[in-house]
Amino acid sequence: TTKLDLLSENTKQSAQLFEQAKKGIPGGVTANIKYIAPHPIIMERGKGSKLYDVDKNEYIDYLLCYGALILGHGHPYVFESVMKQMKEAGTTIFGTPHRLESVMAEKLISLYPGIEMVRYTNSGLEATLLAIRMAMAYTGKSKLAKFEGHYHGGFDQVLLSVNPEEDQAGNEKIPNTVPESRGIPDYYVENTVILPFNDLIATEKILRARAHEISSIIMEPIQGGFIPADQEFITGLRGLTEELGILLIFDEVKTGFRLSLGGAQKNYDIKPDITALGKVLGGGFPVGAIGGKKEIMLISAPDGGRDILTAGAENKNKQDALFHSGTYNGHPTILASGLATIEVLESEGTMESLFSNTQLLRHQLEDVYQQYNIPMQTIGEGSIFNIILTQNNIKNYRDMNKADTTLRKKLDYELLKLGIYTKPLNRYSMSIAHTEEDITRTVEAHKRAIQIILD
Ligand code: PLP
Image (tube, rainbow, N blue to C red):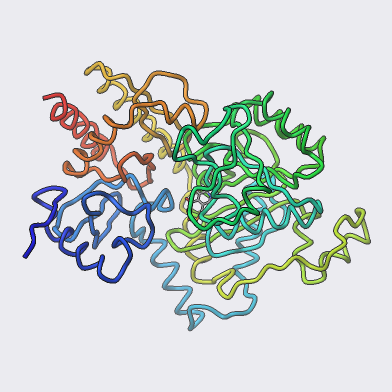
């Protein structure tokens, strides 16, 4: 047998299973982001804040399925609610309308300032896609604007601005539209405008010149879940979009339920026209949703919202109803999981202690790096943060690119071996299952990793 390239002496089973996986799955992974060189760690169990791999190693999990598992792994109330739902329904899904769809809609309307009506999808990707289509239908304009480096899911229309090559990126005030994948039609490159995040003057210039063709701006109010929009920037942008007849879409797939139960919009006190949700909303199952102003959302009604539009506002939408469909939309089992998750988050003191634990970890990590004279800062909001090895101000994607990722990557690999799980270079998400003991262990592991690298 050929010798396997191992991540560590303790990950042999993972390496072997990965070899097997590569035979039937391109690159051995079902999402490119899941690849870790020389082989990903193959997990087989989760409990609370921990993951366990096939070699029986234990990890404190900070990836938490890219932020989705805010209650940690296997929360008993979520399990119970899902089982109860299936038992009582006698099925996994009806394929028809059912009660929980409205229960969840009412919940989201009560929590999110910008949500007056709701439609469900099966992923965050589908939610942003629908939001963008809805904005185009509503405004009758066919271009989309997005911010450089913001992620909205893996589809053609938005995979356009994380530039692998610095020299393709263009002027930082007028970034180029650069495809991030093979196979993206030129149409999208030509019809997507890239804006510089946290730069209101440069953004305004582009928007004023192109307002007649831009239907909406989609943005992560907190880029990657950890680079916040400045309040002044986001307030300015809300004003500008209103003035120019451009809809503002908040992609809160990551930030939803993670900075407050009402997402970033609640914290910023901004009402976007449309909001996209996902991740935490499914409590660990695939889900997405969009919500927004009644007048906009109603164009997805089977009658194109004509009833309400003729009764009130001017009928801006001359087309037929907006197409929105999906076999699994509003999946009852998944909505039961999401509702249980929200219920736990709503219990008194839960969000507060999640935030204070996150702050505790951030402060302790900052202290450790300072002890070793390594330039470092943690940035983020609520229950998500990232470790950036520079003291320079981080305001956008280009600032991130300038930080030292070589050292961070080395540390992340050592941390994996020491039982701290996140994908190398990824952000840290916290859950309510993370304890002070986990935090202490994590901080000690960082110390150890730094010592190993400095030696
Ligand atoms: N939008 C944001 C901000 C995200 O972080 C993600 C996923 O990471 C998506 C959209 C896409 O969601 P999904 O992976 O569920 O399709």
